[in-house]
Image (tube, rainbow, N blue to C red):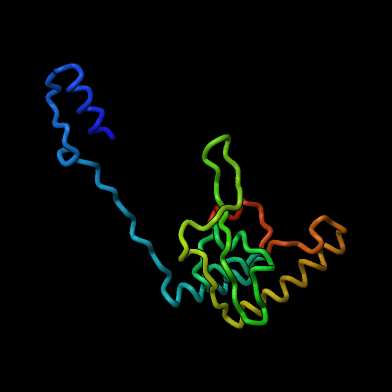
Length: 163
């Protein structure tokens, strides 16, 4: 597109702009990618032990056990979790609206491979069952609009993306 603009300007004004209009002659900046750093098995074990002490430890364990991205597991609804089969299905992602003032919304996964069913470890399935029961109990006690809560992990988004 930029090459076309240069070419058009050079032809229109009959000026030699002193630059090549060929896209091959334009050198784009190199995109540097940061190498992802994975936890070692001992680091993962220590992390999970520490997470057990946190009231929100299940979300950390879930993320580590499934390999899902935060924008995938933070939007999971109970209808996406099959406790009998031990699976979680990614159907939506949590997205930040960059235009029109920002804000969180649920969008579609970027690729068809992102829409997938992930097996869950037995320990996570067990904890999810307890979590769902506690969530229902808390909603009943508070008589809140959260009764029959749809989302597995109801956390403030500002906190959720701090890790």
